[in-house]
Image (cartoon, rainbow, N blue to C red; front, side, top):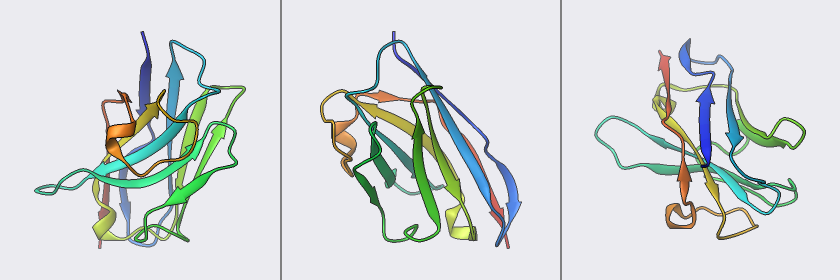
Length: 125
């Protein structure tokens, strides 16, 4: 059974940095795309960033481009999201996702068939 477990969320101030990690287990992820999505209160879940497990294919949403970095560590079966210059509008529950349907990075939620439980990130002004 595939499991994705996020960690690293918390309460920070605007301008701070935070790194989220997602530990993946249950199968080999070398042929998978991995992604991070977020859902703010009262809003729909939205795409944040995605990477192919090889790391060669990357894509970011416009609001986080230049501030967030997604990466994989194949030796640890983890995918990380380094977030810098955080803003109050980055406050959300962040979800890790894995796709066995594509080996390339993807913005589309329907491409992802495995999801973590989410970790809360709160950015105070």
